[in-house]
Length: 168
Image (tube, rainbow, N blue to C red; front, side, top):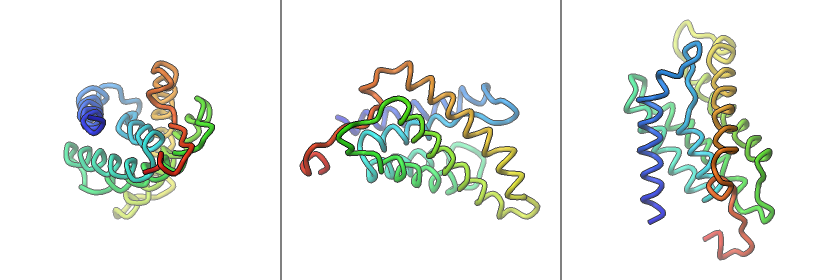
């Protein structure tokens, strides 16, 4: 049953990202709700689930947009791994710490994407960081801030694990 909820999150997130958020762009940059969903899955379920969800969400995003297939899948997979590093803390994460994880993950994703796109002839890495990556981090983080404050804490908070059995 829990896997069906992740599939539903993936489908709804993809529809929102592709159909609705293209109208919410600011200077050509849109927030990445699938990245936000990947961070939440990584926080709640760990590295493996975060990487799997990240790969599938990035691949779905690559296949539904007119871009090269693979960069978003790689970026989201890395984000799922990084977010999953915080899974299992017995204290759990509060809103501020979860926002820091989101900003870190969004920065890693945008850095990877800028690095991949910098391989294109005529594209400068510094320009890509300033024009696309930094605004992408800010916009995604602002949307994440709204999500973390509007949704109940049990939806996005890292699940505490007190025994080895909880990790398996």
